[in-house]
Length: 251
Image (cartoon, rainbow, N blue to C red):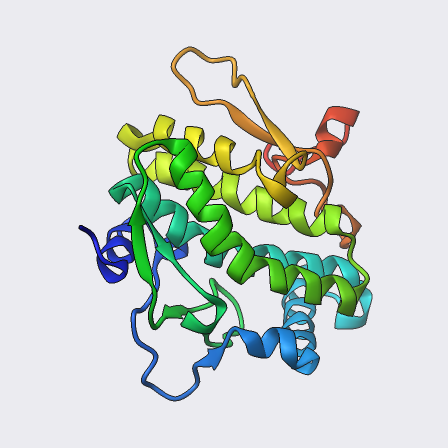
């Protein structure tokens, strides 16, 4: 039986968004709950995101609206929480059962947020539906959902935007798994599709036929992360606005 550390370690080989540490002994690590219980910490992270986005555009931070910046920040953090668990499920067939109290994070200015998991167990799933059930109940509900609620309250972001961001993170992680391990691409997509049919993720998007022979289906959101509201933002590759004729960042 694969333990939590073993499952997460196997996922870490897929890339930086799948990598987690299994201890947080050094100074600077904070509990995940700090982002929920101390709104000032979340506001600080969003302020950093605004500054980074403004720098890329050569603009002052005030020129970047707070709500889109908060949405982009949340999307990035959601990706760091769901990707390792999804990767572990695809690679090892087990899901780390991660409570919010098991997760630590460390603030950085740019790049993927460092994540550490200090405890928890792992459970085997025989099918994609079994694994999706475990992922939703023991990762999405326990770690992502409280953050979505806090971000919605603090920045007036709708549940549709926030859960669409989580869906985009899940689908993006599945795509990255397929890039790193083409032999696991179909398994990753199947598991992501099953996960996206559950609870608050249901109705956030859909997989559509990619068209090319042998290629995996692509994900299309039913909502927008608000990136288009940033100066020069455009739309992301999975955005609902693409179906309405808006130019996409990815072609």
